[in-house]
Image 1 (cartoon, rainbow, N blue to C red):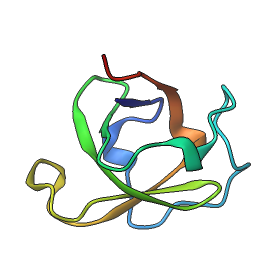
Image 2: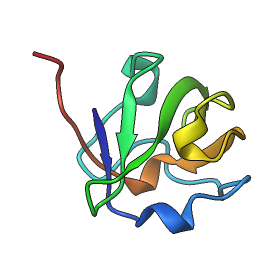
Image 3: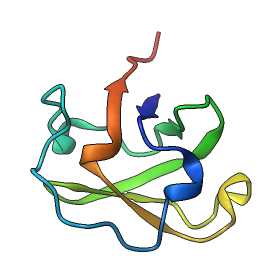
Image 4: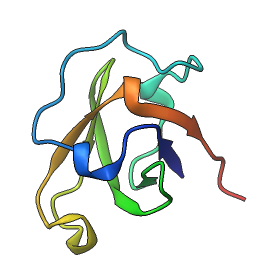
Length: 85
């Protein structure tokens, strides 16, 4: 699970370019596809489709709980990544 610092209502269709990794140094190419993304409030934001570049994560467009449209989020919004158990 990927947990964001930004609240889910800030997820937009386009995110600004960032530094390429999160505050904690998480490298985006290492993020697995189909990992759940939640907001700082613990609510579902979306599901990772793929990483678009070193600083952008594309969320799937077929996730009805996330509005059913693809979104792009910035790596700067990632607070931490929780390993699957």
